[in-house]
Image (cartoon, rainbow, N blue to C red):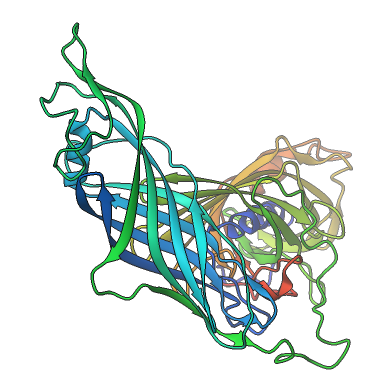
Length: 493
């Protein structure tokens, strides 16, 4: 940022604040499942375990790989309940199994995975983590294939004041096979995924094409962990309900008005956070802050978090929607800022940035291997209003209709790693986002003279850098699982 950060700009400031808007948006979307409590300690945490499984087909055993990822509470309360979330089950079919399926005449495979998980307190309870059906995947001619699905866990009640341990157990796979192979195999009707005889799916040979085909069919496969590795996925300590209690009337967090006020659809969760930062203006000297003077607080961003997700090979794509909230309006706080035009002329103006459409947020997370990189893109459209312009302390009569000729579209990007603890930007813990903004030309500026060329020449243009900082997020419906109230972040320079 420029050393003239204390100096601010008029129209350029609009760009700056517009940047803060989208920055806020991008910052609120990462597909990361690590939240924090008000004290800054983890309230939930990510767990991950990779195991080998021995799977029983009708005529033999095949060894598959399974990776389980989930989010569990950092602690539970006796008498409460635990329901792991963010479950992802990745089944890896080895090359030998794929080759055998292709010999059956299959071109594609999809699966439904059901994982048994032992939850141990004084006694052991068997729970089920049910995966959703995967989309059909083409069987490769070489190499392995990963089938990735989101899952849902059965909640369990905490009955004892001792650590709850989750250990994975049996796995059931329902494989759906479909397609036609390029050429018939003499043993197609008897091949199994282990390479030995089996009467499982029925294959036929077309008289006209001579190709082997397979009618849509299913293979129900049971699997058990193999090898000598630990099957423990997570351990959740249990605390007394009054362990962290404060004096009566003081333990309830003060959640800011408007926090989480957004329509939730699909699997979304309503959260909020504060956004601040700076924006440079390419043609002017200085940087504009993205919030009013303290002690006033910056705008909130309300997010319908992860209302939809899509799995692709090695990736989880999550979609969210964001909306600004400042005193009940979808805008950033009105500010008055000053920059130096032409390097020496102070120009001061009042600016308001209004959100014209909800912020579209797309988060892409790696899910196959550490450090699980995350990239977030946030996009929105805003209108910039300017008023009360002074040049070197003298009021400039720009008139009530002075405005950019068009709205402004802005995309901001945040990047991080979903490790424990997370690095860079993550949705729950916040961090920096950045992008560049184009300021449109101005029109209808001036009462006694045309000031459009002056404002356009000194402010408008591309390449205006925006750097915003998002604070930790608060989920008002589950304040103990998030950072509530949301803290106001310190702008990152």
